[in-house]
Amino acid sequence: MNTRLRQPAVAGQFYPGRAETLAGEIDAYTHREPTAPKLAALGCIVPHAGYVYSGAVAGSVFAALELPRRFIILCPNHTGLGEPLSVMSEGAWATPLGEAAIDSALAARLRELLPSLQQSFEPLFLSETKAYGGLWQYFYFIGSRRG
Image (cartoon, rainbow, N blue to C red):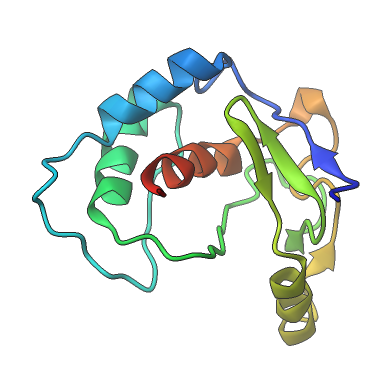
């Protein structure tokens, strides 16, 4: 059972806050011919600006990839607030489309391998008013391409 649930900080600002609208946009950004081959990749770089700016590019990348079972999403600390490197090791991220669970075992292993990686319930943000929402945008593309 997830005891920690990180609420979305910028739903309705950089991407739609309503599930139906968000799902429709993601479908449009990730539309691809069903016969198009998928690419296997160990990693990718995807933009994370508001969907009006980068949704088409991010959607094209995620639609073209064979998505693995687990992801490590790296995101910059645009504000400079909080720890330079941090990870939320337990719980889930709430989204308008449902929850994105954290792989606690993988997070623990990353902290073991990277001693400078700090445990934080709210990585990269100190409050909702100073929130950074780049991570959430990836969840929607990833979730929409899994079946």
